[in-house]
Length: 441
Image 1 (cartoon, rainbow, N blue to C red):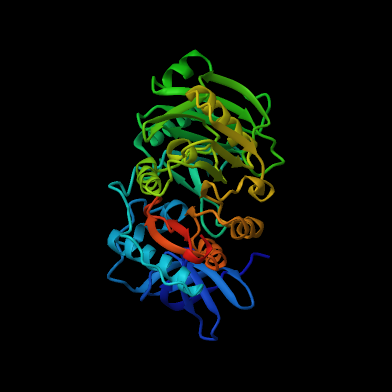
Image 2 (cartoon, rainbow, N blue to C red):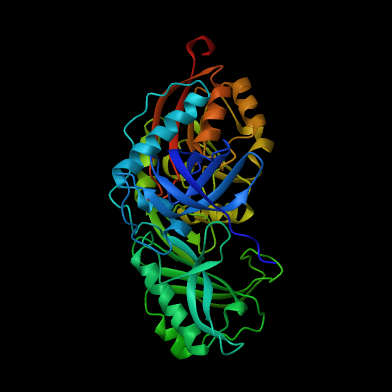
């Protein structure tokens, strides 16, 4: 029996840190919904119903906010960038307020620097992962036309796309070239997982096609030539179909050099297609420039949660200790250290909470943790050792505020600034500089 679809009419009051708007049903239950703005009244299709809250998305706007605009990607914006319906001024104002509210929840009043967004609100992403979709053929069991796709929010299947307005144009063009090859072959969507495409600032492309068949047909001469000169690497990768994620089980074909390179503050970094690297480099560089003002040139640098080392290796001083849990990121970091001939840098494979001995009051301390924030043991070690300053960049303001509240026993905030690394999405980066209080120096 098909599950009954439920709709609710709801008025919405504000936007939450998760990016959804929040309202209340008649019985007082909280409703979190995509595709709707504060001040709007909408019909919501419920996709998740719990005892104390429900979630869904707007199917009809009954009362419209003056801040609403038409999304550029009208069919797929909810998949990639649900804030395309906000005018950009309101997006920036909302993100600033969400930073302040997260810290108010921890009883911390911030004096925030002006929020920084950069000059590009579209065409900034240097990495996109596409899924695949096909049109059902009603008269045959065979699949119809193959298309690139994104997953719909709320578990509602997939939506076919030609690209995304967030991505650099070279990425969207590259996606269509690979798709054309697959369409000409009449490749079935069921045999494919995803297509991962990266671009550097010059428009060079690397791409990985993840497939479910270890005997997938490799590209031959004319197909390879059709990709174009800006394809620096194309790989076909068998990914175990039992895993829902696009993991590398076996590289079936590699054409060209696997790494791209980009310059950050004058330093050239290499990175793999599947590796971690910042998505919006111009805004990231601005954050690095601001962070560098608080680095003591006479001290060594400890960089926790360091990723591929792009913070420590660009703004760090003295001997560098770069600590990261992901072995692939550490491998890339080591390669960059060797290639750049940086003699005073050490890449350390370890969870930060198990590398506490590197936290020192004689070092610049940089932390850029994942969304979960810093481990409690790291906060406790900082309070014990008392480094003079902490440079804390975060992709989750709520957990950053929680950590800062713990550290406020001994530290004052001397600088705070938000960055719009991901325009048209709810994601926010925030920088906080903490300085040891006078009585502890």
